[in-house]
Length: 165
Image 1: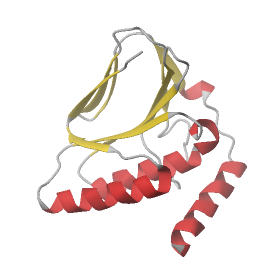
Image 2: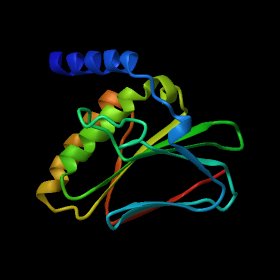
Image 3: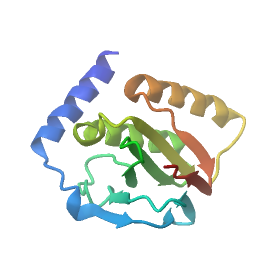
Image 4: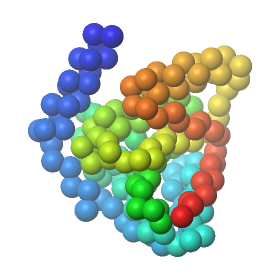
């Protein structure tokens, strides 16, 4: 527990040092949005043409190689003005690293997205091994739920997300 608190304190102090420029690393989309990299894809079906914001985190919002970070953040306001935020990691097969990258990004961006009403994580891997990986993924999901309140979706190759109004 002490190490978790220490890591959170380090991330909090890091956020005060580095000012993140969300606007320069964000693109806006009003149609379907594929977020893809190296054969892995998270596809946002946007039938109501809501204004989707895609933030490039890795080598964008957080350019330093010293810090772990996920690949993208996608966010939008629904018709009731609730903000939805999705943290996306497109990974090879190192699921533990993917969880760590998403977790760190959530903590680093909490000043901007911490009050969002709907927060989710999607980890798309090249492959998810079974059955040993099931217990590892379950433990990592539980840990992330405790730390961030977010339980991630973990899948192979592609994930389709329906953007509701």
